[in-house]
Length: 240
Length: 295
Ligand SMILES: Nc1ncnc2c1ncn2[C@@H]1O[C@H](COP(=O)(O)OP(=O)(O)OP(=O)(O)O)[C@@H](O)[C@H]1O
Ligand SMILES: [Mg+2]
Image (cartoon, rainbow over all chains, first blue to last red):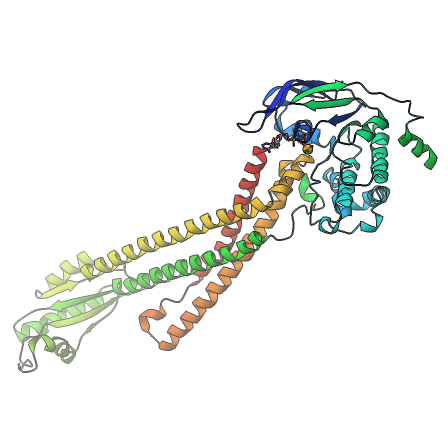
């Protein structure tokens, strides 16, 4: 079953012109896509439709084979909990520590703090923030906040991961490390969409690209390299 | 319901500036409400006990120009009144006292000691309804031709009319104070909640159910309401206590009946609970509405 499918989706804000026009595409389970386009092309808007923050102005959006417009409002939270989102502007809870921010999606599912502490701390260490575990977002750098946001989005092992410019604020080495995390999660079955400006990363991974231009979407096939030659995955094997 | 037993998620920032203001606003409104309720109820019970006292008293006049007839009539009337069940006492008022009372109207110069002054009998009933006054009036006339019963009806009527006006006026004032309390609580809640819109929105997008988000606000705003309500009530009680003890020191008979009674206090104690409830419900409705506007 398709994770998502869009059919002739149009989207406008208020009375403005259409930001997205006749967008049609689908996401196979376990697929990895990049989402590109110049600034203001509508990448974040498309992701908003995917994480169910907005309804399309027209067209059909299907999630797991269900028409979103016909889903009972009560059933939406359950669907949302299958989605991990890295927001472009992070949207962390400013009064919560790194640890608390990252633990929140698990606790939302009813997990007890004592049961998840180890798991949360492990992931935070993995994104290199073990020293900033008890720090709150106002005291974190842009790149550190971005890593907290990423950790919060993936802590759940979501079915669908949506990342909006997840490497915009970090140096190339860290960008590669974070990208590796996404690829690894994707290999374990998480359908992934990453919006990015970084052509280098797109070319390195070679995944198919959803390209937004003037509100229209084109799907460019990937130049998929076998996983053994994929630099990110090799790095993983080096580690083990 | 199952959310109640979960650990709290603490996704709300501690206290925003608008949040911190709300309990104070509630406290002020609660203070005003308490004072107006207490004042009204005290005036009500003061008037009630006053008219009660009046209702348990009647007077009988005996008007006879002839001295002998007057004395005969008054003795007969007194005897009959004292024998009537339901009457606690019947006493003739001193002729001297009556002359004192009427002298201002007649002037000092006049020699009034020889005037045929009517006899006045002060009658105390066991309680206001203990005697059928119409029947008593007829029997009085049969016993003593010059006797006339005055049951203060006209007076009572005016007192009760006045009490009614005071009551409705006060109810109007209390309603206005209560309504503005509700309005201010609602505006205060809304202002506070506007600052939490981002938190609500993130929780919503992470897949939190509406009930779980709303519950966090229930706790917080219930507490705001209780805090403000209790503080306002406490201040109002201090002021009331101060006023009452001042009045009692001044020893004013009528004013001392203004001291708040137990049912007044009970009503006042209810008010913070009601305010807290209104605050909580406003927050809940506002949060739910904000959530329903999100997809
Ligand atoms: N809430 C909004 N109300 C009105 N217009 C909006 C809103 N959000 C975005 N837009 C407009 O929609 C268009 C697409 O915005 P969007 O944020 O999707 O672009 P983007 O591709 O993510 O850009 P960037 O790479 O800069 O993040 C822009 O022209 C923007 O001005
Ligand atoms: Mg964007």
